[in-house]
Amino acid sequence: MDASDTGPKATDYLKALPQYLLPGHPLSRVIYSLTRIRQHGVKNALIRGFLKLYPSIDMGEAEESDPLAFEHFNAFFTRALRPGARPVVAGPGELACPVDGAISQLGPIRAGRIFQAKGRDYSLEQLLGGSAERAEPFLGGSFATIYLAPFNYHRIHMPLAGQLREMVHIPGRLFSVNGATARAVPGLFARNERVVSLFDTEVGPMAVVKVAAIFVAGIETVWAGLVTPPAGKVVRQWRYRDDGPQLERGAELGRFNMGSTVILLFGPEAVSWERSLAHTTPVRMGQLLGRTLR
Image 1 (cartoon, rainbow, N blue to C red):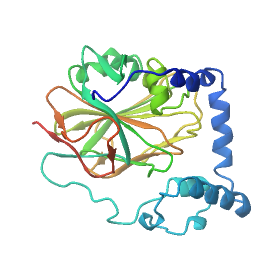
Image 2 (cartoon, rainbow, N blue to C red):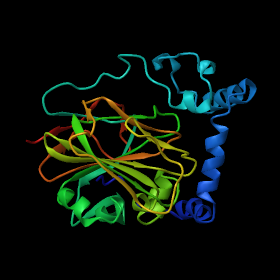
Image 3 (cartoon, one colour):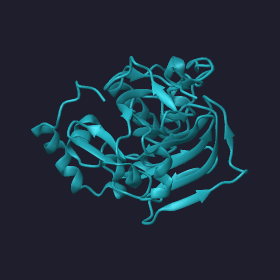
Image 4 (cartoon, helix red, strand yellow):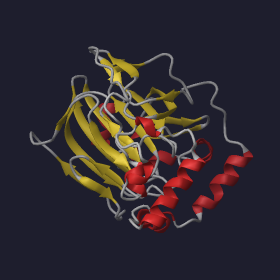
């Protein structure tokens, strides 16, 4: 947590209010279809418009540097990076940042609650689909919340080597996850649709929570493909035993089809976050996020 994080302003509430009324899932399905149009005139116009809106995007980092070579906008948006574009920490006990983005919050999980913004927190149990059993290993542990802006690289990678033991898809709302909405909407990350991946690691359980948002028209994992859409109405769960995939530190585990937020969870006395990281600190996939304590 960081003292520079201020409480909600009147403008935050004004920005959040229309989102309660918007049909989030139908709008996201429209975006899903639009971003997969292969007709050259349409997809090229979308890509050119996006690059004009976000001129900081560096296509020189991409495996395919020609933005118009992609089959549709979503392929461009989820583009792979060229080898070496994101060096991944490799020292013993070093924790790799899973995504490009900015730190929203990070710190301890206190009394089963996770800090969202000044004056707001939310339930660990609700974040993990309302399961006390699923939440129990993380009580007294640590969390890090990382926000991905539209211009960021949108593939998600492993912070540590681990073996998948469970995946959970939790239906929910589709609020924006930017700073204004995080300050204004109570329990934001435990209300939005999300996909939770639970891994066994050298320091115990690790959860990677991929939070959807307005216009985030799909969350994928490398082992299951597209998990959402469809959004559905009930919690879906996949349990893995010895057949769960083993992924190394830095390996891709999934991607956002449009931008959102990743939340990392660890158990008690498992990791310590890098001291230089605080609210709004920019981060890049592969950089040092913290260190293991075991």
